[in-house]
Image 1 (cartoon, one colour):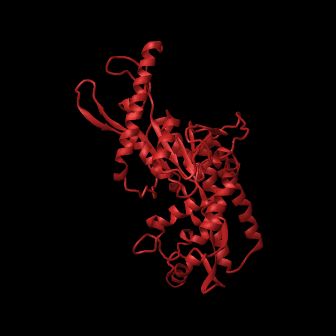
Image 2 (cartoon, one colour):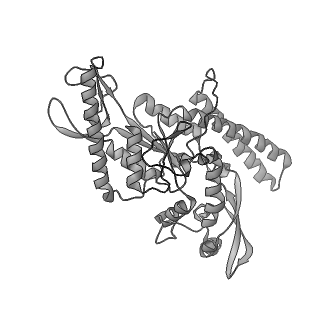
Image 3 (cartoon, one colour):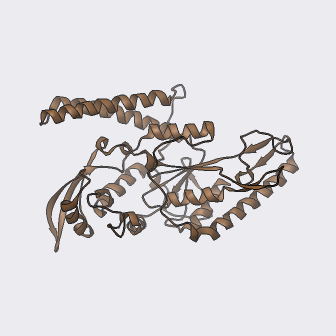
Length: 381
């Protein structure tokens, strides 16, 4: 299940709540002993960022609210990734022009690595080991009532399905949903010797997951090992050229030209992986959020508040308001223009489960988490 949308749309929180709803304590059919069986997996796109040195550059102007943070960054920046220059003033506040890596574009994500992780989960039911940096920073205690309500809703649906199965005698096979799943593999015999179809939910959340439908050449195979080898080769070549440039202490047009060619090959490989990624999702959810609401939520989060109160350190320009305006939101509009123009994305009836190009778009823009979760559960059921 893909969960996508702009920054601070609530992707991580929705994935975490759905994961909890669709996992439950199960009872062993022989011993009658209860045990917690994890039947859901969550993958975050934020764990697949490319090194910032590989990303294209963006130049943006600070907002008035950034003035103190920019001044502090000039004196205490330990990141060393951005060039900050004075750009006059607006009213009584100085303005700054900032140049550095653009982290809100397709080039910023290792789609080959993300595809590999999802393929491994689909084939083994287990999440492979990789470095994990992201986590949902929302306290879940306040959602216990919502979670129990959704679990009850799923259980009612499962009972209805069980009755339908019994009435239709579904080939002698009992179809069970995730709440009744006791962790056995698809098709394994249950305690009564009957075959069961057992679902496992994998939630993949990220801000650049989705792409419009394209005509795919079915004869063209996507081999992860081959694509990974390409990425490693291109990355090594870029590192070698960068070392040569440093040694020259000057700009070399020939080397820069070589870098441009290799970067184009790297991004073409990456974009092909994103296209292949679309076929790996069974359900695609898109959280519909306005710019104003996304900005408000983003800068209320602890990681975007200056340290020591929060987690924003001097030099982290991607956490500034100027970057949100010219990097985050513009990047979002460019990536999802094909979907944002739909009537569904402009708001509608919250009871309608409408799909645009295979994507379920949240009908109510800026909906609170309770409405969002209920909509997502309805889609999944």
